[in-house]
Structure formats: structure tokens, C-alpha cells
Image (cartoon, rainbow, N blue to C red):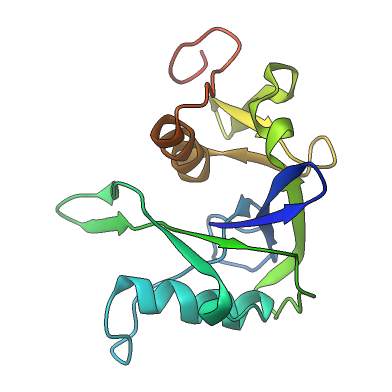
Length: 171
């Protein structure tokens, strides 16, 4: 997660993943990131490398804010997945250069993320979840694990981040 000071409010960086055959999250909104490679010294190094690769943003000049609680996803015995999120702050937004894995990158004002009017239902297959609209309707909706990361961040900093009804997954 990358936060940047711009005007009166901080903004957060999101990416729209490129559409790729076989990628179950193809076209979805996310934060820059990916898997830990054998060359990475730890999860944080992997997050920094992935951010540099995906959007051309070198976090060496960014201020590390900390690490959120890990999210355990996937299928525990078959395909376990641990999602580690690191938060950084920058003084101003640098130019971004998305690679082939990223369709677009966008900065979203923090007040927009907590605006209840932007919290919308999101359908994925037969299931319905809650999401937050960060750009074009029906295209830029943050949901799923990325939404859970936002919940964790706002909980950590003491800012209400609630769905319209305050419940879990939508019906």
C-alpha cells in the first residue's frame, strides 16, 4: 500500500490488473504486489520489488509506515496463500510506468475510500460481496482481499470504514 500527500488529503495507489487468460483475478483492482521470489530476502523486499516491476515506483525514498496483519487465503491444505501488506508514505506522487501486468494505475483520495456512498455490492460469479468504488463504475471496484486489507488499515489508524449495513459478505 502506498500513500501519497497531494493537496488537503492523502491518496492511495491502486492498480487495475491486466486481463490475462488463466488469471482468476484478471482485470480486478488491487495493490501492487506478488509472490516472494527466491532472490527476495523477505516479504517486504518482495513487496518493494513487485511495486518497482509493476508500476515503476522505487520505494527506497518512501517512508515505511508498517505492516498490516497477514491475511490467510486460498485453500489451506491444497493451495495456501498468506498475503502480507506493507504500508509506505511518499511526499508527492511520482510518475508511474505500468508494466504488462497492469492495465492502469490510479491514485484515490482517502476520503473517497471511507465515503459510505462509494461502498457498493460487487458480484463475482454467483456470489455477492461488498466493495468500494474507486473509479469508473462497473470497472474499478475494490473487493475481496484488497477490501479486507483496506479494512485492516483503517481499523489500525482508527478511521471508520464501514459497509452500508455494517455486515459481512453480501447476500
